[in-house]
Amino acid sequence: MGSVLITGGMGFTGRYIVRALHDRGQPVVNYTRDFVASGESDIVSEQGELFDIPRILRVFERHQVEAIVHTAAMSHPTLSLDFPIGTFSANVDGTLCLLEAARVAKIKRFVNFSSETVYGAVDGQVGDDTPVKPSTPYAVSKVTTEWLGDVYTKHYGLDVISLRIAQVYGPGNKMPEIVGDILKSLQRTGSYRFHQGRDHGFNFVHAADVASATLRTLDAKGPFGRFAYNVSSGEYWRVGDLVDLVRKCRPNGEIEIGPGRLSELDMKGPLDLTSTQRDLGFEPAWGLERGIVHYIEHLETHPW
Image (cartoon, rainbow, N blue to C red; front, side, top):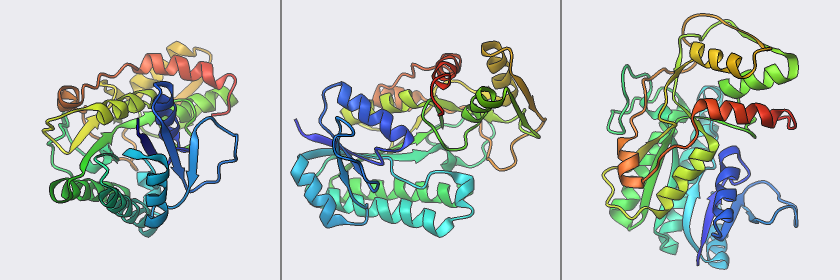
């Protein structure tokens, strides 16, 4: 059995995917720019950059890599407004180098992590055929990687599938994200306050469901009706309803969030999973209530 190589396997969702593959007996290689101490994990790790194609090709050969899951990125839309050049270089140039290495090595399945941010602001339901309207450097970079993947599929024989992933939450996340921000603040101080956002709507997805969708995509045989698919919990939550759910699960916490939308984030309607369920066989297992209960339990013994 060949290996699956995960870029960014030390990142938030990357760690869930690496563990899910390992737990099902799949040889997996964590390809990361960060140093991983020998003996630190039972996962094989290789240090390297996405831009170093000779290095990547040696890793492919050494571990008999047959498929790639590409999660490595500068991955926050609002932060990308401060780092447009760095975001585009890391996300687009890095992906292009990885695609080219995969072409040379004749690797077939390539799962590319994209984002729901490619749609921009959308009123109503969002299908994976909804026109993209990116509004940040990050979102533009993700659209570009999708289109590059489609080019490599059509012209070079790769099998690239992009996943447009919703707002990811769950234990282990260190990035700004509203579910984690509220629960970590309650754990540390007993309260959470923000001046706006109660009316903002979110498509959430637990990191474990992201891992599940990734494994389904690796295994899917096709035919594929799309080159990019939505991944979410299948639920849609306004922040005010999220707060009510958190209060139900943690009644002693004090939460105050002002009215209106979150001005720094695009708001869209519910993500449609019809194509994802049909073509990839993905069914979300983590509703938000289950996820919050589990997250609260985790934070009782972990900082993140």
